[in-house]
Length: 497
Figure 1 (cartoon, rainbow, N blue to C red):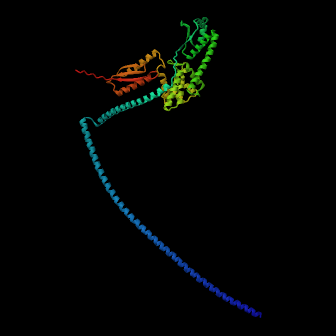
Figure 2 (tube, rainbow, N blue to C red):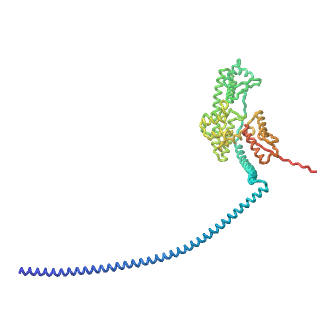
């Protein structure tokens, strides 16, 4: 039975293995068929894609061919247009060459014609072309010079009219706003005495009192027959003021002897030094200058006792500073620089009696020594044209100095200096050829020159006035300004019979 069971199992296993093999073969067969089917489908899809690509490529190729055909047509048209233009250019070039040839022929003909005309003109005039050119150039130079002189004269007249009106307006306004008294002093001073008996006490026993006073002060005492007065003479105004103050103190005290004289002179010297310092400070404060060096303030205060042509130099300096500052404000220049330079422009006159050099050189030295700016130093140096003024403030100081010194009554000259200046003015005018007469008028502030009319025309008269003015500036020293007037007169007389 066991054997039968095993046989049955083996039979079943055999049958199963046979069936499995068949199923396996069938599965393989099915797989192969599916694989073939997939291959066919893939081949069909690939063929369709290739066909589509071919169709797309053919379509694009067709479009590009059409575009190329259009572009080829356009290029053909452009080539035709370019050929036409090249042909046109060639035609024009030929025309231009032809005209150039014609012009060259005409130019040669004209040159020949001009040459013949020049030869004919030279034959007729008896002059060569070079001589004619020289004559023409000379005439042209004369005409141009005449035109230039006329233009210069017209411009000068216009500028003079406009500038004179504007300058008068500014100066009159400034001078009305600036009025400073002028103190006229000389080299002598007098001291009033209570009685003539005081003269003997001043002289002292064997003249010891007067000698002591003269020695200590450097002043000459003149005791003459003038009733109840003693005259003090000294060129240095500070020493004269010290002597005057000391003598007044001695006369008031009544005790006059050498020791007392020495004490009073020393007190007077201290008072005058304080007065000098105070005047300098007052001047600086009046001008609104607060940073002036102390030593420069003292030197400025010494100008209170200094005069020039009878004009107090400190008051003159104040006036110059005010005028320069006002004009600077009117024209838009630096007011502070103009005021400062105007106040210090004559600072050298405070020491020019004790040191060598002109007041300008000494003033420049003082200003530089005490730290003044170069623009201030330049204005001091240029206010009498020792150097050319190259700043507007320097010009304003020079102008204000002339206004202050030139106004009537501000200064006085000695008779001898006045007469010499008038004579020199007339000599300068008469030194030119063709001058009939010259007259110094208006107290030497104007020179009138009468010329021979046949030797001077209007332009030459203008040039003569300018030349005389320049010579006066170079050769004369004078306060203010001098006007030069040239008179040219022609008189024609005819008698009716």
